Structures are given as C-alpha cells and as structure tokens.
Image 1 (spheres, helix red, strand yellow):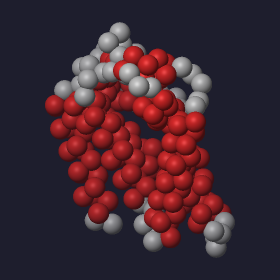
Image 2: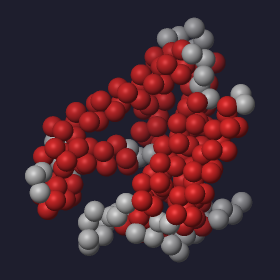
Image 3: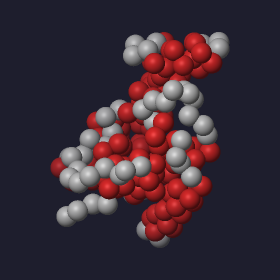
Length: 197
C-alpha cells in the first residue's frame, strides 16, 4: 500500500510508526493530514485501554488511564512534551525575546519545564480517567483529532519565532488558511461521527 507523501510526512513527524514511502516535497502540505494522524493516534490509544480492559476486567480504570498517557508519550516520541517543557522554561525564565530563544535551544530541562510536564501529564491522566469512568473511551480518539487540528490552526495563524528557522519552520512558514480549513473540517467530521456513538 502506497501512502500519499503528505500523509507519510504527517505520520513520520507526529508518530514513531514506521511508514513506507516518500516524504512530501513541501512539509506544510502534510498539515492537512494532521487531524487524520491524530485520529490514528487516538485509535491506537483507545485500543490500548480496550485491550487492557479485556485482559484485566474489573481492574482500576486509573491504571488503564496511565497506560494511555504513557502510550501516547511513547507513540509520539514525546515530541510535544519536549516542546512544552522548552516553552515553559523559556517563557518563565527569559526576560527578552533573545534570552527566551536561547533557553528554548538549550537541551537541559529546567524547573518551569518540569512543572509544566508534571501538570500536563496529571491533567491528561485525570481527563482519561474521567472518560473511562464515564464509559466514553471513544473520546480518546477525538482528543487526538482535535489536538492535532489545533496544531494546524496555530501553524497557519502564527509566525515562526526563530528568524533563522528551526525544526518546525518548514511547516509554519508555508502553512496556509487552506491547510487550516481542511484540518478544522476534518476535525468537525470526526466530531460529528463520534458524536453519533
């Protein structure tokens, strides 16, 4: 099976999944596939909790929620966890734009980044606990869709922070309103489809 190059780029960027095929010539073209990739991530994580529920019936759903959060971090290489930690260290630790950019480039993890990661992971775990306890685990799929759609929205509506470019520059500098609309429409379709269940 041959995947379209923009989908290959989206899957390789957002997951650790080995995907055959060529990358897109323009990385920003993969943005229209971010919501679909989010659906795949969410479906895999939903499958993790469903499998654990079947293997360990009657077990505490908080354990399954932890497995979903850990699985999500592993499946996505912690890419955006790392980005959040860098942002928190830079935002709270730097007083000028230049200092903030220098902090973001530093590979060490600071106090603000650590606090941000702990709070985010606790929030994710609590959210998944609520979904599992309310018997609404399919919303894990929707969380993957919406979170990746928001990334496209932000890419299309903001400038890249570093003038000399960086990891995400090729995605952000070429992101368009069309990418944004397609990602949001895809998220809407998934929302309506899952809402029917």
